[in-house]
Image 1: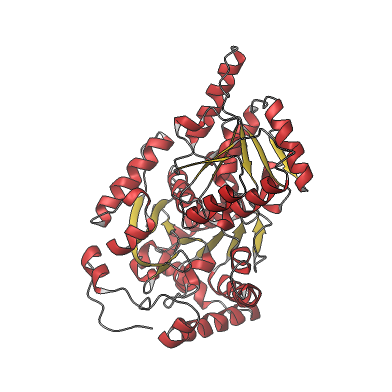
Image 2: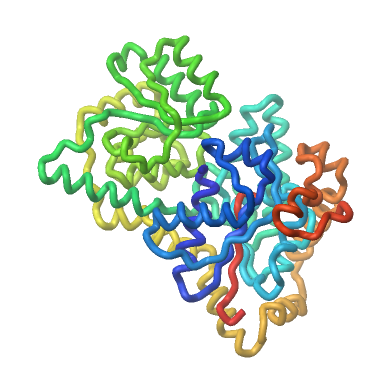
Length: 469
């Protein structure tokens, strides 16, 4: 239930609303032992079909329309130390060549760190990477973080250049990568905009709909803003006397976070994590989010959509939200106190129609189509379909053209990466999950795949093809 899982799902649904293309969302399939570590509320699925049913029902309940895209699965393994899902084997083998027109890699660095298989830009006509996560910020917080961050920075550059034609970064909080630009291509669940409209109507009629004060919601790990939150409240305990904050979240650091708050005698009330759209959260007026590790906080966008004040740091991850009058950014800890007091003593302004639209998935999809150059590619594919006959023909035509120096360098990087990731020893030495060079027997049973014979040598990602194919 993280932004990097939910946002690609919404993107697939809204891209599929257009008649220009067919969409397939590729989701990692985890064996049951991994599911128990990853999925909330002890939820597990006995088969990919069961998980697809859950995903589709969850989505359609929120978007309010029948979704028209395919969901497919690729083998993945969970790495507990990095709290990440790593693809097992060559993910590209699960896409038929006749459907390989455009690939959208959600978190291209993550998906390609240990990718050992067909080069994406060879298999697909156009490959777009969407960077969700500030990995360098997280890594710097670990032991020997500066050294690790140095290497990861260069690996991220290598895989982005080798495997993507275009890279979209959600905010300036992300690493600058080759062929990249900054653009927020995420929207909010329509349910949040509906809540905002309803609350604005209630306030207009004189009803008091926001009476609960302030809250924070997020996965309970230190890097998700909890360290900053506790430090700010501890430093200004006297200045914020009487200020109470409700905290909602589950996570690996829950015990430590709550223990630290108790030790400092902070006025924090901890609750189990819940969906941000839950009715119990509608009555809060102020969302406090001091995180500086986010790239573009989904919960911040959702809170603004519901018509709440948001108190957040003056940080590149919050640049998109600055234009909203209910977004109160602070630069110092003293400024944080001032913004909290301001939010608690004022009423938020209702969103204008333009502001509501800018937060919507319709607007996000329009921005995505424009800045990823998909409009051009789809138009070109449509024009060439009648003469080329298939996406395979178009790739043959592309490969026949003379490569430039940049293409040669990119090809050399891809080949070097392929050789490196083909060695289990080198993979393990850089932190790969053991046995991810290929999928395992349990994957083959769960997904009805051929048993893995030899060791050959993502977050979600997806592809789509033109209707003629």
